[in-house]
Image 1 (spheres, rainbow, N blue to C red):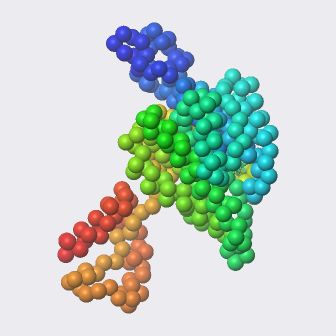
Image 2 (cartoon, protein in one colour; image 1 turned 90 degrees about the vertical axis):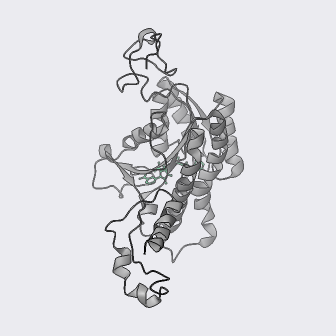
Image 3 (cartoon, rainbow, N blue to C red; image 1 turned 135 degrees about the vertical axis):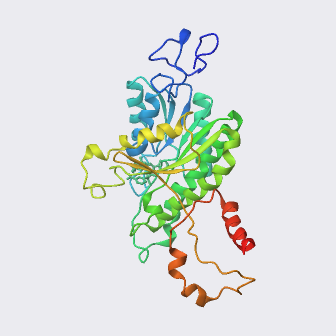
Amino acid sequence: MATSTGKCANDRCSCVNCTCEDCRCEGSSDCGCYLNLRGRVAVVTGAGAGLGRSYALELASRGAQVVVNDIGAALDGVGHDDTPAQSVVKEIIERGGEAVADTTSVASPEGGEAIIQHAMDEYGGVDILVNNAGNMRLSSFAKLDVRSIGEVLDVHLGGAFYVTHPAYQVMMKQNRGRIVFTTSGLGIFGIYGADVYAAAKGGIDGLMSALRLECERWGIKVNAVAPMARTRMAGDDLYAELPNEAVGPEHVAPVVTYLSSDECEVNGEIWSVGAGSVARVFTARAPGYYKHPTNEGPLTAIDVASHVREIGDLTGASEPENWLAEWKIVADRYRAS
Ligand SMILES: NC(=O)c1ccc[n+]([C@@H]2O[C@H](COP(=O)([O-])OP(=O)(O)OC[C@H]3O[C@@H](n4cnc5c(N)ncnc54)[C@H](O)[C@@H]3O)[C@@H](O)[C@H]2O)c1
């Protein structure tokens, strides 16, 4: 990104392949300033292990100052251990990066505020937030203890609100920010025995699809990953067909890095990521069955029962840009006939 003076206009350019005095990188992908996170502060929740650890290592390796948040809980979310967050920080520092440990739970508004305040106190800002912390409790719906659903919802969905809200205030003031949420194919496509987890992840998708419409005016982009990686949470069986080297969290981290970078061009998308595959997942609307309520009379239960196939036929399905666009499809159809 050379300016007329020849000096690189990108203040984060580390110029691996060129010199600052005569930078001709034009933001090209083989220059060190491309996807460089120098000068950026990242908060990664649940970063003491698994996927979060990989994200923290990769963001730090690209120059970000990282707040490694993790309570060091067991898989069901119970317990507290400072060691996982501290050891990831040690790993980052040993590799020449900058990081600080934070062992506050994401599962309360006060916790979320404290995590973001920690980033402010330590590094003076928050540019990147990766909402990754999570727990897991499996139970069929029939055997579910409904009194305990808050323990899963509060971490995944509550945590996404509690940490994002204070981070968003900082990002709005900076006019810059990248937020990555963590959803799951288990929520999007479903799986037996994970009703609460699936609902929590589905809630995150809803949060993101609304927030994406508000955030761009502040220079903020929000996206989500639905990862697939062999971690403590996934266990040994879930991806048993593939060898360890194919399903490690390191195959998800580059996607989180891209979504965290200034170069990220997408907003409001869910990307399914794992084992070398990166693919957008989206919600679409089928053309459906239509009966004009004025010209053809009111819709009846018999109409519905006799058009079930047409209602579910995805041929010609489309992805409305937002709910108003979906309503326009409905209203236009009425007005057209
Ligand atoms: N591994 C997969 O295939 C997969 C698939 C879909 C979604 N996910 C999601 O990815 C994220 C990371 O999962 P993982 O597979 O690395 O699991 P993991 O169990 O290895 O890591 C989760 C981390 O979150 C931390 N944590 C739990 N509760 C917390 C809280 N209240 N505050 C702060 N930290 C907390 C844990 O201590 C743990 O280190 C989760 O949100 C999970 O739901 C994972």
